[in-house]
Structure formats: structure tokens, C-alpha cells
Length: 269
Image (cartoon, rainbow, N blue to C red; front, side, top):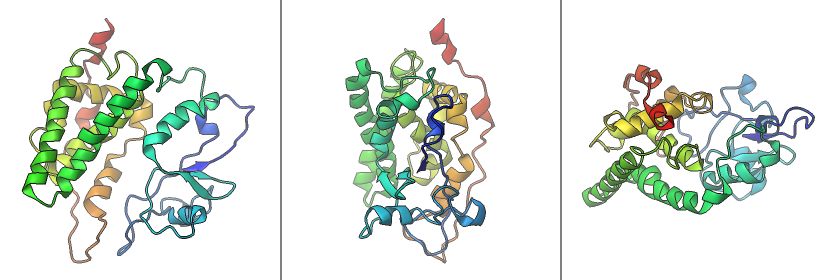
């Protein structure tokens, strides 16, 4: 993601000051821990004119030797990564960049709810976002079962919470809904099968499933959900590539039901 100052005389949209760059979900053979702009002309980011995200990490720290991660906020004047912490980026956009938002943009981090949002974010991060990965990457049966149970105990809890209200904090979408959505969108497509969290699918939870379809019906969610890229990322990319390991991308599940009607408007009556 590249930062661009844009024309401040234009209507106040965050897109005018922060452009979005998309990296290829696949990596060249043998490459570990980097992302490339091979989806763009000349295999380079049109704003940063770099070929890989690691170039911006190294400009920020010439000794950086860890994996490069996304999302990353890059200053186009210096070409340096200035924030790669997705846990703080949403809050940063909601607060520090508020003056660039459209006047009708939702307040994802309302001041009156911030303490409650922060608390639930920690729960979602520990018991859902991280736990699905820990289950899939567990090195022992005991560890796998610990994270497996953590995931489904929390999904059951969320199913009950969403039986009483449209979104996690009532009738408004907040930061927390976005954080939960990114895992739910991947659940049946990847995690249920590849990470062995197979007690239930998302579609088996009436409230969670309709809640997720409700979010997906909004352009901000749908236009930034690429199921094909998700499957490529998880089934063909590995942190330890093996050239002799066939990486098959499943054809399923059927994604047509994502645009089926949902029942969440019942809470607005």
C-alpha cells in the first residue's frame, strides 16, 4: 500500500490520500517471506516503482532480515514502510486520517466504545484470528486440540452474541467486525480443510453465516474479498517451499451462496 498526498481540493475520501497496491498471492519458486508486484505492468508497483515489498522494508531498515508482511503502509516520499502492524492500522486510519474521510464514512472506532472494542479485539485476535493458525500449525495433538477447542468455543459464543444484534456492537459496523470478517471469509475456503478446524463450517452457524453474508453484501467488504487469491495464498504458498510437493488448489467450496439473501435486517425492525 503506497501513501499518496493527492489533491486536497477534491472531496474528502481516504482513497485520495492513500492508494492501494496489491501484491501477487503467489511467489516465485524458492522465494520465502517476500511479496511481489507481478500483477502490475512491468512487474512493478506503479506508485513506488519497486518490484518487491522487501525493497520498502529495507529502505526503512537496511538490516531487516525477517519476513515482509502485508498490509504495510509506505511513505512514497521516502519509500519506507512506516507501519506494518495490522492491529493498529485500522485505528490509525480511523483517528489520525479522519480529516481525509468522506463525511458520510462510518465511525469504525467511536470514542464511546473504544474500551469495549479494544477488549473484544483482543478476544477475537486470540481465540479466532490466531487460534485457527495455531491449530493448523500445531506440532502436537495436545496443542492442536487446545486451539481447536478455543476456536469453536469462541465461535459458539459469537453465534449467541449475534443472535441478539446485527453486528458485534449492535446496529453499527465497527473495527471489530472487520477483524472478525477476515477470518470468517477464509474459514470454509481454507481453514476448515487445510488447518483441521473441521467441527463445523461457517455455513453451519446460522447467525455467523448470515452476519458474514450481510457484511459481504457491502461493496467495501465484497470488493476487497478475493477468494481466488485466498486459495492460492494458502494452498500454493508456504514459508518453506518444497519443489517436489504438488500444491493443488481445491475447486470448492461453492461460493455462489455468498450472494444469497441474509436475514440480518430483522434487527432493524
